[in-house]
Amino acid sequence: MRVLFATAEVSPLISVGGLAEAAAGLVRQLRLLGVTVELVVPDYTDAVLESEQVIHLDVPSWARPAQARSGSLEGVGPITLVDVPGMHRPHPYTDAEGEGWPDNADRFFGFSAAVAALARVHQPDVIHCNDWHTGPVLSFLQGAYPTVLTIHTLGYQGWTSGGWLDRLPFRTDAFESYGGTNPLAGAVQIADRVVAVSPSYAADIITPEGGFGLHTQLQALGDRLIGIRNGIDTSRWNPQHDPWIRVPFSSDDMAGKEACRRAIADEIGWADGAPIVGMVTRLVEQKGIDLALEAVTYAEHLPFRLVLLGSGDRGLADWAHWLGDQAPDRVQFIDGFDRSLAHRIFAGSDLLLMPSRFEPCGLAQMQAMEYGTIPVVTPVGGLNDTVIDADIDRRNGTGFVARSADGSGVVDAMHRAVRAWKQPQRRRAIQRRGMDADWSWEMPARHHVEVYESVIRDRQL
Image 1: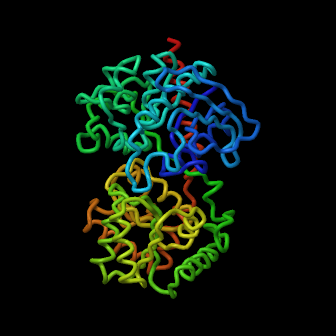
Image 2 (image 1 turned 120 degrees about the vertical axis):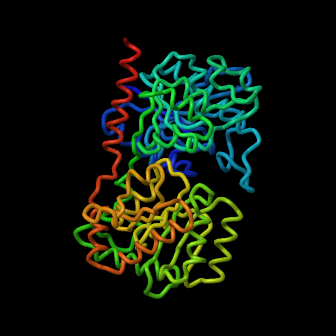
Image 3 (image 1 turned 180 degrees about the vertical axis):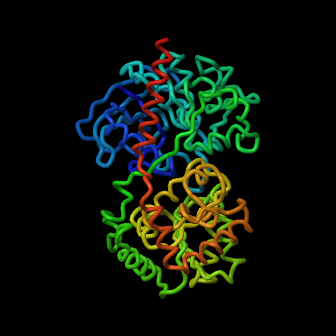
């Protein structure tokens, strides 16, 4: 089976959020299962490819010139990088001030036209698109191929001016939205299957509260909408073989976990003491950063220390900096992203705080559990599918789930988590259950193969 897999991000080449990790992990596992995957990504940076081959693509005049460079990239494997006018940028979506590039519609509609042109050259069995950046591909294909669309984050739909409707050749009615053009809405209505990145998220997005204005279109899909939980790359996120942590460890031998805890405390400048709570995240409202910072401010009676690694919203970053300056013994904020530090935080923290307002799947909670770090999460999306509250199910619990995605819910969940942390025997049991669970991409990838087979079969009927 040959699959053309189009995405705006893939780790480690270009990584802004969970899309990059999910794309990389799924593609890698599909290839291990014997699927031939052509991974297609925008050519943001002129990355050097081994054994490079270049083809020029036949696209509409407004998207010219367009070309595709195919070859191999370390850490990714076979990849095709597509260049259209304006694609080269230091950040795929935003400028130095965090504002979206004003020509993002031109760039990603052009990319979509080029992906469709590439498909006509290579004739894959299935085309798999991801999020709004590749939504217009389905219009440019004009129904010629079996298609799958994955929704990683419904909150970002790529809405732009209505003038783009004149450039879409197929099902422009599906893309029309209140006089504008909605790339994700159109793709939802045209794709043969739509995959949400967790079963709970598939249920969330058909509700008015979780559908971001597309719940009616998503409800209409019926069984064409499928929820498949993401996985994590357990070859990279593995405390037994992680080159970036102080001492390796496993669920059978947790001595290294304590060494990693001391190492991150030393790195920050903290003495031994209260539990360390880690956060590795984008600084956006969705992730509930304000709820985490409020928990530190208003729950001074709770003995925990927060280390936060991330970048994004300037106001949230300034607040985190201010808290770190006011209470350096309780808060450490590192503005930016450092892959090796992220691994050290997961390995050395006692708890992971993930107070998302909505969460399609989430990867950090699975990465944390792989490292014996107990997650404290809100009851939304994929967090519901991956974390079992240890106070509700004491036999199978793997973390702590807030009763509500708000400040009081987060503080209560943190209180319960700290209480459990103080009980070594119970703490070890919760850690082991999280570490021994299968968070890999193997089963999710097999489910994707089943989806591919079903859309091919439907087209043959």
